[in-house]
Image (cartoon, rainbow, N blue to C red; front, side, top):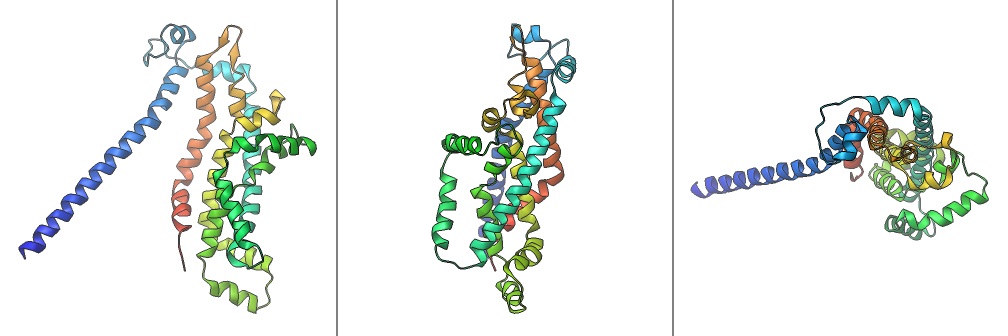
Length: 285
């Protein structure tokens, strides 16, 4: 009896210690993420003269929204918003369609070279995106797609992590569903579209949100393929926010805050979908 009680106390003590450690770890990472955000907000509310005199100061006696009004009046930020939204939405649609079909094919069908194809997909996770910039640019230039939305959406459709998520999710579905549909004479497209896709909504939500955020924050690729200021996205447009005497930091931070607002809305509305999608991709039959 004493041994059982001591074991329970030890377990409860370890459990409390682990929870305390986890809480402290979360607080540290929360500070790492939140402090730069708060600094950007306070900087965007300060006059340019105070920023130049003391750029590391958090406080100002003249907080105002002057930088926000100047950004809205002097830059086509609403056009950048629209460009970012159209490109992100187009990228999400193409990525979901391409990667879900590839994930379905790898998980539910058997064909020669399947292992090699899946290995190439996984190898794509190891390659930094910057390595592919030059060949992708040459391909887009050869297709005469520069300064178009397609130049942004098509390369992003090759997302190895999205293929891996869909392959894992489709592999977790009961094989009886697919076999029953095949016995009823359903084609592979019918099985994919009418049987499997409706069951993988968590994976679709997770991939869609991650793709949207990645596309919205992308800077290098839009900078290379979009040269017209009216076709720029929010991150690229931020680089053009400067005056005759150099970079206007308050306006730059105001643009960054305005550009991040849609992402906050997405995460606030769909954070549960993200967790469900990532958690359920590991479910097995």
